[in-house]
Length: 191
Image (cartoon, rainbow, N blue to C red):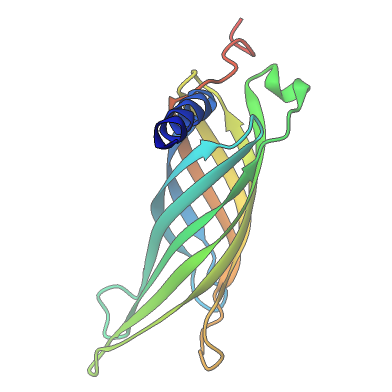
């Protein structure tokens, strides 16, 4: 019985992985933080296709900003996130003819905001919490394995009830998706 279960598992995983699309994202971020100045940084993501139109993606990013650099009242902000979520790419034939795809994602995860005030007291504070974000944007399949994209979205971090921070706002991502392996429709737009 164990041998049969093992053979069925190998068969299931080999079929499932031969159709799944795996990819890695590298992106630059511009993130509005609400009460504080916007931060800029970068991030990485990894994901795989659940179906032709739906993917699961994990993203990690970090961004920072420094106000009054070099002055006695210098203030540094750091904003880091780690999220997991679903990305949906609806099939739109008009866009697919030009290898352009409209993608939408909803992610949940953890966030951390740190503020460092450089003065005589050298004050530093940080807060960790929960984040929810939504993104929508366009992706252009430059080749079968490289696809630059641009996303716009909204994010909101939820910290403890006694926190002074209200971090949330618009975000813009400019990045490149690298398809590692998987079964994709390579004929569309490459004729």
